[in-house]
Every structure is written in C-alpha cells, then in structure tokens.
Length: 263
Image 1 (cartoon, rainbow, N blue to C red):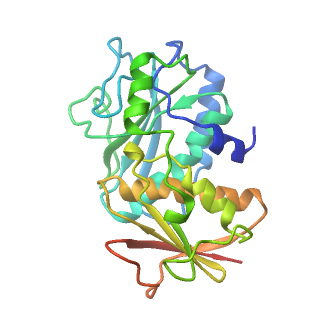
Image 2 (image 1 turned 135 degrees about the vertical axis):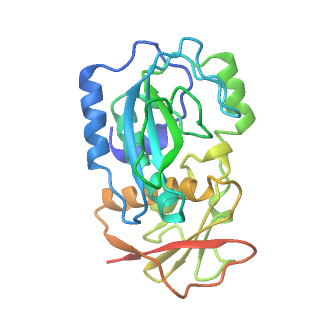
C-alpha cells in the first residue's frame, strides 16, 4: 500500500482484537517514530507504551476504545509551533501504522491523573495532550458505528469551500499542480471532523490558514498539511515551508499558519 492509498483508506479505529502488538510491529512503529520529522520547530515527544485497560477507555466525544493494549503518547509544548509539529509529525506515524495493517484513533483530551500519565515524565515545557490506541482492528461495534455517524466522520466539506486560487472567491483549477495534494489535505482526519484548514494558492505558493474551532485546531491543521506534503513528495515535487511576514489577508477570523513554496 502506497502513502496515497493509506490516506484514502485510513479510518479511525475504536475496536481492537485485544492481542496487542508483536515485537516486530513495535520495532517498525518505533522506527517510524524515529524517522518522523517536522520543519516547524516546537516541542514534541512520541512514545509507544503498553497498558492493561480491562474496562476499556471512554474519552468524551470519541466513544469507547475497546481491546487496545498499546498506545502512542504525545508530550506536546504549549505554543503554536508545537501543536503544528504534533499534527504534522505524528500523522506520518499514523499513516505508517495503517500501511502495516494497524488501526489508530487520535484522542486529544486532558489526561492528568489517568493511567496514561502515571510514571511518565516529559521534557520541560511538554505535557501529555494526545493519546492514540494502535493495534489490529476488528469489526466495528454498534457503539463505534453510532459514534462515527454522530461525528460525521465520513463527511468532508466540498473542496471549493476550503481552497482558493489567487483570491478568496475563485476555485483552484483541477489541473493546478497543488490540486491533488490539497485533496489529500481535505480528506485528512480532524477532531470531531471540524476541518479547520483553509488554503490560498498564489503562483507557486500555498498559504495555509486555519479557522479556530477548538483548542485542537492548529494540531488538526498540522495533520492536514502533513497529508498535503506527503502527496507532494509522492509525486516527486519539492518545496519549502516558511512563516512570511506579509500574506494575503483572509476573510473573517482565519489565521495564517505557514506558507509552502514550490521549488
């Protein structure tokens, strides 16, 4: 399975087989963690740990997580760069897990006093903000199906409501170099399917914005930008990210995050 197929096929998994990961799978996932990267700076630590949660785990809004024994833990800094890096860098690991036949589910919440925080020490300036079960998926339970239906997980906003060309009213032409990469951004996962990302294509640059919807909006946009960038790489394209001092002024309350310029 190539990276594009992984992006198109991946779904959030809440029901696992209860068998836990093999040593080989753990080794491959830890290698994926080591090889993950971000150009945005900030503070991020990713760990893979095993837990014994006999009663399952029920975070608010995400539905019951059952049968999972292994979890990724993300220690994240409190600044914007750390949130952007967390989304961008960990999504690489999530996609690798799917390519290995393993399901995952991003969970951003408060974990103080939970089993996930016990015995963990994080680098200065970081705290546990995201966990993610990982393992072999089983047939979704009725509760999981209802959760996905409630969150609208299969639904995505139309392309032309999110991405624009030269101004904030003109659609991106289908033959534009960035069209496919933006489509992979469009289908990326986000908390409660909020899809906060927006983008404006001008010449050989893509200006990325987000529309604040929750505390996870910057992290969510980092996930989407990762899928954009991985698509660029897959098709042999290259470019660089930068934080510009002057960008096109967006409508409403959109906030500029970063600009990608093709080489």
